[in-house]
Structure formats: structure tokens, C-alpha cells
Image (cartoon, rainbow, N blue to C red; front, side, top):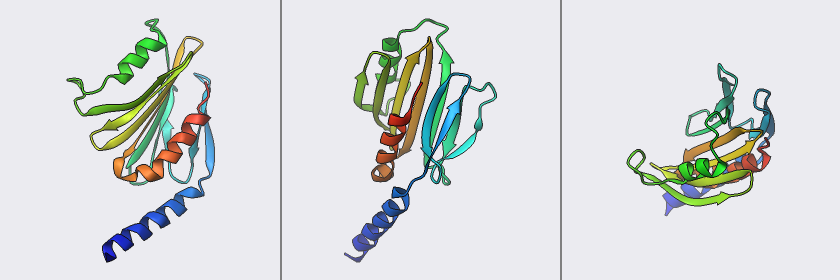
Length: 158
């Protein structure tokens, strides 16, 4: 019983620490997209050499956010990208389980679980460019990162 109480108190304190998030905006000039991220939780790792995006990590690297843009050089449809992202349990990724997917006119969302981690992907197609956010975190910290994923997704503009 005492260990359950300690875990409960830890969860409450952790949620309190993460509830006062201050969000900062990252803007990518090459692909003209932006995203807000909690600056006290996710730390920028530096823009990629080709300027297509950036990776953000927590201090202990138990969560990562990757945002990037790419030119649609192969003239793929948004539906092609959506179908590829929605594939779960395939030979190349047997532990991926998709639990939610939604396709709209110029964007899609796919989320689920993969090897003990929660993943969330949102991709936007605009000006013949794909702009993607991919957020992944430990399943054990779902209660902490789910609200952050929701905020990040809503802030993603491209």
C-alpha cells in the first residue's frame, strides 16, 4: 500500500511540474512551417545540415520530437504517405500497432504504439511539400506526454 501511495504522489508531482509548460515556437524558413514545443521539457538539438528541420529531446531522452520538411520530388499523393504511415505489424516493423488514423484534405494523423513507445505523426501537404512532425515517448509516461502531443499537433502550421 505504501509503494502505491509513493507512486501516486510521484505522478501528481510530475504532472504538476509539467502542467506549467512554457511553449516556444520553432519556425523553419526553408519549408515554411512552425511548431510550438514546451521549452522546459523538449530541448532543440540544432537544425539539420540541410535546413529541413530539427530534433528535440527531453533531458533523459525518453521522448523525442522530430519535425522536418521535404519536397515532393516523387509526386506522391497525401494518401500514399498516409497509407505508408498507417501500416502496422509489417515485416520491417512488426511491433508497430496503429490505434488511430485520420486523413483530411491536406493533412493526416497516425498514432499508436511501437516497442513500448507511443508515437504520433502528423503530416501536412502544402505547396508540393510534405511537412511532418513525429513525436515519440515512453508508454509509461503517456499521462504526461499525451497533453503535450495534443498541444504540439494543434500548433503545427505549414
